[in-house]
Length: 234
Ligand code: DC
Image (cartoon, rainbow, N blue to C red; front, side):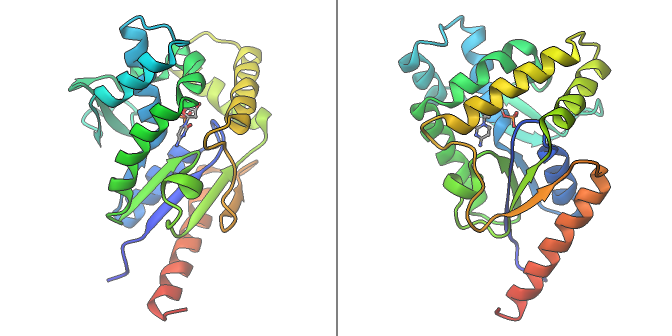
């Protein structure tokens, strides 16, 4: 049997990380773990409790307090997994414009990152995991191997996100989606703690113009190559 790898997939918003990570995990029989869902869950919890997003100490305390669980999808409604927030399913609530609008701010708080990173590291170190996020290869699991940095142009990513929202009956315009994506990119790449960037030993995959299956094929080829190298001790 091949060694159970810990695979990191990082990249900007709507780069196709979730789709790739899920299909790669399924192909390998690994666990798919989306760390973005955890930051979204803390944001949702703060909104539900009507906390001010500017109240850093309160949001950080909340991140230490709430219980977030990711499990295999229990409903066939297009979800890739279930997210439970204090035992209540909140999977689709994590995708609302309200959560989108605040999640960058929440995820920039160091106390929030520390609380969530510890949990992510514990799960990632077990192996047999495809972990997706922004800082998996750089901060959460620098020992992950291979590390994939997945990206695409802002316009292509905005178009994908726009289509996803429209399919769910959301009427946000393409221009609004593009604007919000640009803001999130700027925020995610410039924040002080764990900014979005590729790890030095990450392999870049650019998904412009590629179908999801083609991205999966390339990623699988990288993984197989790595497994073969490990098997021969290279
Ligand atoms: O991947 P996503 O769009 O669901 O991520 C939601 C937000 O969480 C996004 O603003 C970036 C942030 N995030 C992060 O800071 N670190 C991660 N490992 C994952 C997501």
